[in-house]
Length: 254
Ligand SMILES: Nc1ncnc2c1ncn2[C@@H]1O[C@H](COP(=O)(O)OP(=O)(O)OP(=O)(O)O)[C@@H](O)[C@H]1O
Ligand SMILES: [Mg+2]
Image (cartoon, helix red, strand yellow):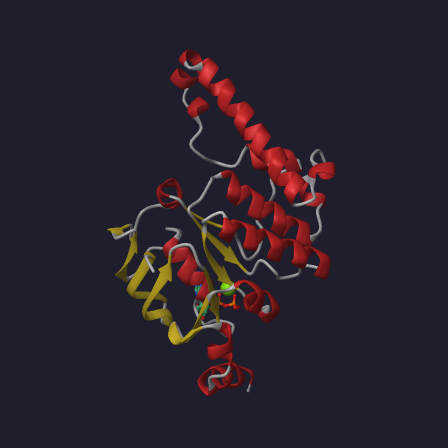
């Protein structure tokens, strides 16, 4: 089992609140790792640190053995770690298809010189992107809505579109923040099928999720976070049978 990502002793505080408390865990390459835990446990903050959105106070993130701590999000994405969001952001008036075509990435045509002197390459790349976007929209059942405003999509469809946007970047590691939240049962099956296919294609996936059906169906390994650090790790069956996990959830509800 090869480690894709090692998170070492990460501390992140917001004002007086500790979101991550010397958090250490390993993400195995080619596996689906679930991160579960009560509200406020630090799950989203962990993804934020991993993807460069939030600098940690201390600690290290290693990707394939190389430190990436403190790199900005675009640099982390360029190395192959891409994420989706718990709440899908403002869709900026774009259509469904445009949302995918304009997903930031390694676009040759981005600089003026590139646009002037490498027109052939730019056009070839744009065709490739268009083919990829169409294939993704087909796969997630949104092709017939390609020209609809992205903002007109349902919550679940937005989640799928955000996932497709992340896949346009051709990631090695895909981090999903609550992919099942607000998703209807048929769309949830779609997402579960997609995650399985991505795993079969060799992707490493990290899934932060409250929906235990999804976690049980797709995760090879689960870390339970509580108060900013892993409490229990193991298979879904192992962690859900652990009394400390039940207590962590109930403790919060009390
Ligand atoms: N930008 C921020 N400013 C201040 N406090 C924050 C910020 N982001 C997170 N926190 C705090 O850090 C802690 C962990 O938050 P985080 O969003 O990572 O939890 P979570 O496990 O994702 O929770 P949920 O399951 O509700 O999404 C919480 O106490 C939260 O209030
Ligand atoms: Mg969260």
